[in-house]
View (cartoon, rainbow, N blue to C red):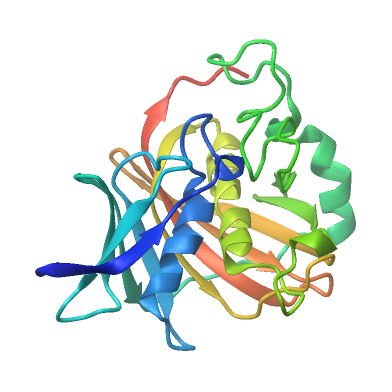
Length: 255
């Protein structure tokens, strides 16, 4: 990225929107950062996360002079993320049966006790994660489980989450497309590291209060890089949004 200007733009991530206990949720913050790309209708945003996202602290948005739709996010002198507009092509498998997905929820790793060796005595892989944490009092409560060679979950959204138009904020859609990718690898016995990059396109913002289906599947592993795909559907299984998530590294797994 070429020389930049801050343009007096700031952004802060509230503590509610955490993924790890002390860092912002990768999908949520990527969705917030993606708004700076000013996407055309056929474009997707690519957000590369470079450092943990601080909570309740203002960060600077520095726009590229030559292409103001590209930007980077910094906290003091630390690079947090880079954002750019891209074209995302993704083969999306048909979503699993809705009833089978509902029946599978109780088997979700997000609900298993003591699954994370770093968090003994707690429920779920990331207990207080804004997306998949069963112990987060204001979380989205998305619990995907293996169904038909994917992971799938039914997401019951709330009307109070709606924006001025009654739709779910794009950042919530990005959130929903994030964690399921990691659970897709977990279903194959692989515990990935942190989210390094997310690329997503929202075709149609769903209404707040609607019931939605989230799916994810593994795509490839290249060294330390683990690539997954994810998708969001309405209750008629019409595609609303899709994404790829790139997870870096691998950690010990205890099931």
